[in-house]
Image 1 (cartoon, one colour):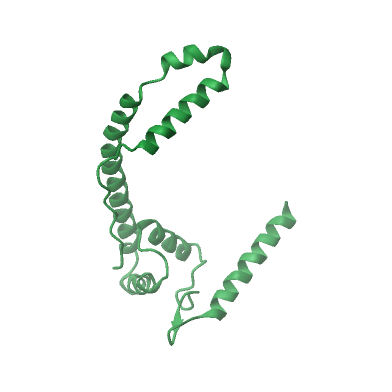
Image 2 (cartoon, helix red, strand yellow):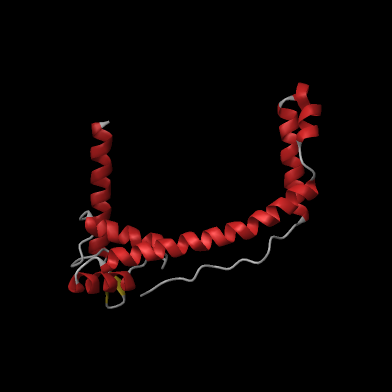
Length: 156
């Protein structure tokens, strides 16, 4: 099944631009309430403290992000394997031919579209014919979206 590996980012980088942005943020906080600027300045942490805390949070955020992404993949696979063999095979073929990025969120969205009837497995809007995008199907999809939006505007 098609998927895109999650990017791995290196350690948090303490840069002069990040420090300048922090100084600007803290200055704007003080200037927002000029009568209390001295009190606000006394409560604001130092640049070094903020950068050290960001570095600690960065590692934790990466772990949490990877865990969330893995949980979404497990959820998508559970939903996919909840279908019968024939339906599952068709949905996997659709996923493998879809122009969406290979992320769990897009797979879950495609499965949801199928479940609510927005995705016709026999005529998906992205099927390629002879290397060309099925423009008729894309045109029908765009017309449906415009009609749905017009109906919403008329109802409001």
